[in-house]
Image (cartoon, rainbow, N blue to C red; front, side, top):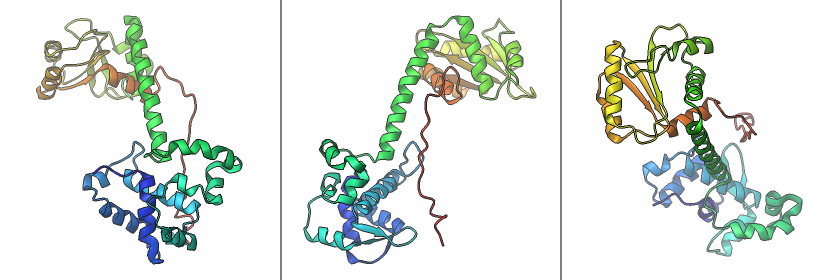
Length: 301
């Protein structure tokens, strides 16, 4: 089955704690994973941030129940049901979600602050949300990144060949190749025949070199183009090469690159844009958000 949303975990989590005993958070995560019959792969599924998705959702269910004073923390990573939580279970609710928790003033203050009563109606339209706030932030970031990558690629496709060559140099230097910008600029474009557009140092000392071919192809780059580049490397007795295109490579081209004895890396337009974002080439930072969590080690007495 799919991983349940964090609101679906609130009532099951509270029921596990109904015995009034202290329970470790890790224990609760494991019990809930069994209750929802999660596969091992689902338990290990990660968010873009690197945290475990299911554990993250249990953590947010814990946070909401704690803010509503249905459960309480009784030590490092240990939880216990409160009197209010016991009373809620006695009502036998079919579901506990954010809308249900709005009956508790502490929760309203947590969610809306001074605008609690004015904003409660707005929150009522969001009860179908499955993702935790952290997941929503991750998804929003990925969406913004995809749009940025598409915009970048469109601009790269419209630039001149000379500008595209400089862009490739800037990217390779930003990734740690080519030594200085001046070294890379001199190296690339030196060889103009045999299907090789440039040569660049693999490291700052120049212990090895990488042969580069960068083209703004319109259509899909097929196997014959990659074969021709491989032949050019053979003519130079080179063992490493990089092909960069603003379009994409065919499946046959990628399969061929994997089988040949030389190390050939194929970078298509989508990956090119992603690398530009990762290495800050052609982009500028607009804003930065730092997500923090409680340092449990700090409070470990």
